[in-house]
Image 1 (tube, rainbow, N blue to C red):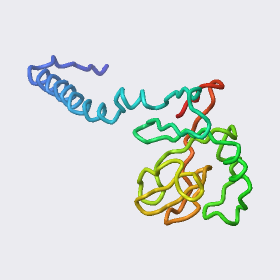
Image 2: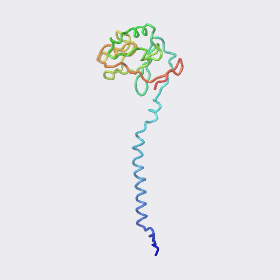
Image 3: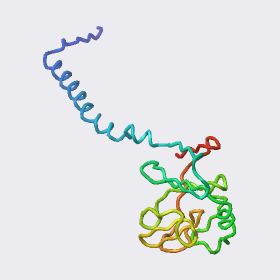
Image 4: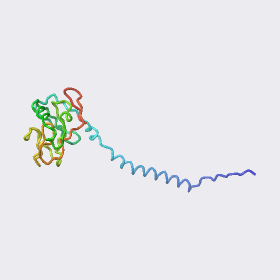
Length: 173
């Protein structure tokens, strides 16, 4: 004798189980979607991911401050005297040793994040005994290469990622 299998017709209860599960899945997806969506950066953050700066109008000895990702960026057009002075400093005199050549792509241009590495204040440009950057809040003094020379700051001013797009324009970020 052959075994026969009989299929039962779906009942109203089966339909209700399937419909309830489908509505539950759609509801869970609708509840989770805003949570996942809010983790993505908004359009203004994405737009601020990089900024192009026209450096053709910055005179020698002048510092331009631009904003990138909510942080001040100092773009300093250094004088030949400043370049010679920072390159002549022995590394053993520095709290956070770094050569000037490792901090710049072109000797005449210094690009650093303008936030003091001590407590996050914004230093003043062309100030202090080294004519670099001076943080008036706690007295940190940086040279024209953004290297810490005096005061409580533990590290040099941070160099952001940047590149020269042309001789007159840089892209930060």
